[in-house]
Amino acid sequence: MSILDVLFPKRCVQCRKFGSYLCSNCFASISFLDMMVCTVCQRQAIGGLTHPVCKTRYGIDGVFPSLVYKGIVKKLVYVFKYPPYLTDLQVQLVELLYEGIIQKEQFRSCLAKVLSIIR
Image 1 (tube, rainbow, N blue to C red):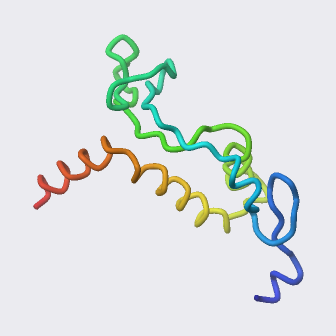
Image 2 (image 1 turned 30 degrees about the horizontal axis):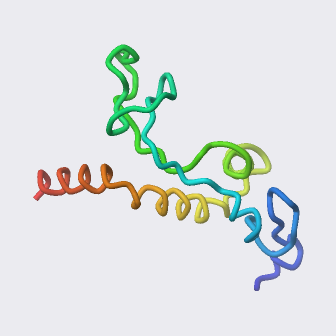
Image 3 (image 1 turned 180 degrees about the vertical axis):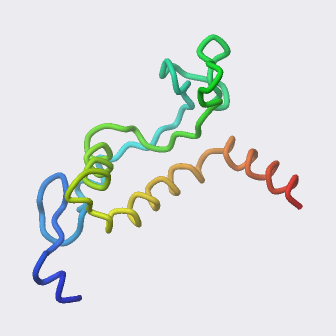
């Protein structure tokens, strides 16, 4: 524990409970995304690729979504991104995204292809 923790104690961004930026009760309400979606129309897409009709010249080809962007996740990203900039949240956000993305078979197969090209 540092002096900053005494002067500025951590509180859950959702329920304001002391201890950490994300308490166990609020963590339990986070939903991991099972299906892959098109970045443009938000409908289900095979492999997370953007539908051919949704593609634009400078648009994203596809994504590997891991979390449902609503509720506590939306609030975590907001307090990280906008003032007063809780940069301590970067570790928790990265861990959440990592946990969600490593569970996706499509991501692991895509990563294996990239790693085989690099070698």
